[in-house]
Image 1 (cartoon, rainbow, N blue to C red):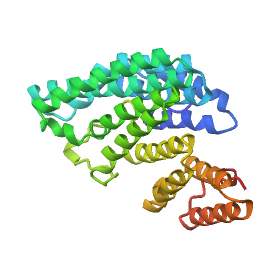
Image 2 (cartoon, one colour; image 1 turned 180 degrees about the vertical axis):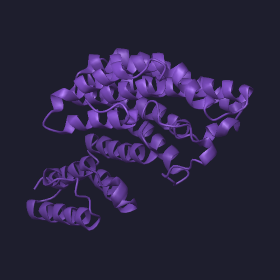
Image 3 (cartoon, rainbow, N blue to C red; image 1 turned 180 degrees about the horizontal axis):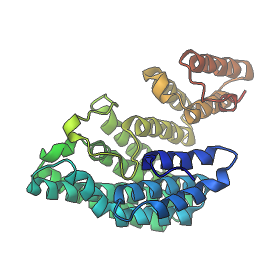
Length: 308
């Protein structure tokens, strides 16, 4: 057992790290034990533990346990968000509006994750209902932002900025699951356009806007953009537009190899090379892609991703 004087963030990180070690089966046991040790008043850290558990269960395909962890986060949200906002020492009237808006925004993000979990489990009807609930919360957040757009830097909060993209991705994934690739393509394109609008995927927090550790671990804009373009390419592939699919992934890598050349993108692009080229040409293109990964020190991409 790790000593109590360590910050809770390091305890959580140690538990998560076990999932990638030889003792992977102990990762969830350690995190559940940690959840019992954290005081009941530490709502933010309890939510962080549940977020770590949800990610591990999703990776293992244990969907019921993942959904239960996400449900616990939703229950913790009001107090967790209030704790974060109160610590910023803003006026009471501003604090109340910020807590309301961020609680709804986090709920929207978590519902989106639950809907996607239903999709992965093949429960399309349930996914549609959860996505509709998420959209309802986003409408409420938009209304609050229109009334008080500058309160506490809400519009610059990373989660607020990417929620419109999440709504489009939810719709796109639902259409994709139903094999409506043309509709999915339109929604993925809208998501990419939202993220591309400012052409800046770096966090823009000011010191006074920082609220502390994230509660639900929302994905950064750069990751969402990469996944959106990757999914656009998959839609083109399923619609037999091979050239467009290859051009999209190659263009994505040219934008920023360090950010966008991931294991998934490399695997999909190499698969497209195999499908659309003769063996020598496909092999040459895959080796070029490997050289690009080596040039930008992307050592986390293994040879299996390049299908060689």
